Length: 375
Image 1: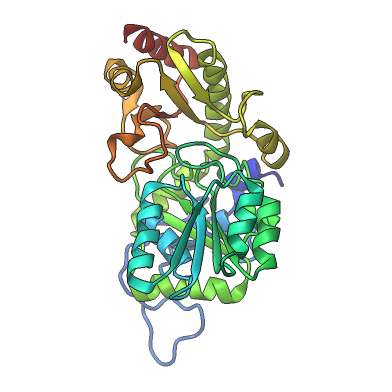
Image 2 (image 1 turned 90 degrees about the horizontal axis):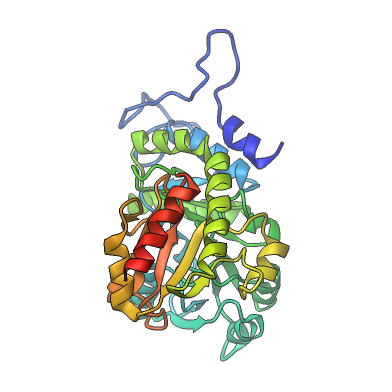
């Protein structure tokens, strides 16, 4: 079945007369248990919760994983679990334009555990391969594709091959693309993570993360990390995420189409100095995205004429677009990324990250056009 169908059908209760169509919400911190517990038997809410299972099954199916996904309390919890696979004193190679909190966590690993952190331009395959091999073999390659917020597109199969050649694991943050646009495990990635908060849940009302691994030993380590660190999700939030997942294909299809149309118009707008979206034939990531992905995503990078002040002016002038720091919801959002002191210094100060939602594209365009002209 197609991913669009799986998003609707996976993780449903078994069919029987009178059975519910939707997975039930179970609110319990513990479960009836006596004697020696059987493997997989619900025991205590920090270890397992029955409400997690339908979502984990559905996401695992969507990503084509050999195992169900593991849900975490946040996207950063999932990222921390994945990066815990880097040993003390190991070497971590990751994009210089990774999500800013991922970069902060990498710095923390360097300070606490002596991890050697190497920042690379993830779209420069030769440079990444060189960093993986020298001055010593890497323990892990971390990939965002497209990157947050610069929208660089990596040659994922080539990078996986280069990383595995030196014995490194490959972790991929697939939040921007979603499993409807790319499935990194099929390219040989070892671990995939999501901020479920974003597209998967899709309604800006939960904070959750998820991690997946095909290898049973890696899956077990990610599971153990969640249990030992208490990085667990509330049942109600996971139930909401599963409900959101059911409309993922519709939301992604609509948002991608609108993003491509907005990027096309913005590319010739007199108030725009630069626009990034992989759908544009002139975008540096266009060829790779067209070859490796089944869509171009719904995040746009925009730099208006006039620098940071103009960018802030655009944000202030918008009426429909929501100024907020998240993305992937049904509502369109934007922000100037360098308003955060922790953002990478190589991100332009005037860069606006636009997350296109599912509103009417003409309404979104009129709001953007008016705001750009006003500054």
